[in-house]
Length: 231
Image (cartoon, rainbow, N blue to C red):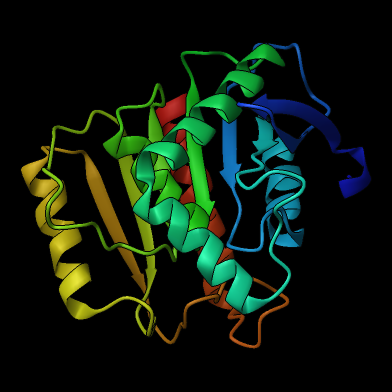
């Protein structure tokens, strides 16, 4: 199945044009999975994830978080853009809700929705759970685990899977410990899988840190989790 089968979905947030991508198996009441891409926006990893999910019987939608006119093109731009959404988490949550709505409008079963995210998108997956968005579960894949300590740890309803590379230099030991404390205090149904010999972008085939073995295992864990909570 080709990535060319992904279809554009144009939607808006307060006048900002957003352009997501959706798989072709729509209007069948399938369980839906929202994909939140890494800090450059919609990329090949997110597209391949959508195709893989369609093959497993899910309708998948890749969210456009930034908007068509605000896509970063350099690491500096991506860092600044993603940091803005991490700080303004309510805006990030709103963009996720808008994408969920598009997924449901396309025919996904509204009671069987999950969110998965890579890197910056992994942070978004956690924000979907923290914000009590209407999703059954979330998967955070090498995401930033940090949360502002001034924010309270409220009860979390969504089931959570965090897949964390053991050698991720972008996540401090303190943040790794605090996310576990947050999950416990939030009374969440949660699990963390730590992948050995893996660095931050280990699931991305275009990254020099790609670890094919761990990436394949990660995908199997994602499907196992989604099948458990959505099927």
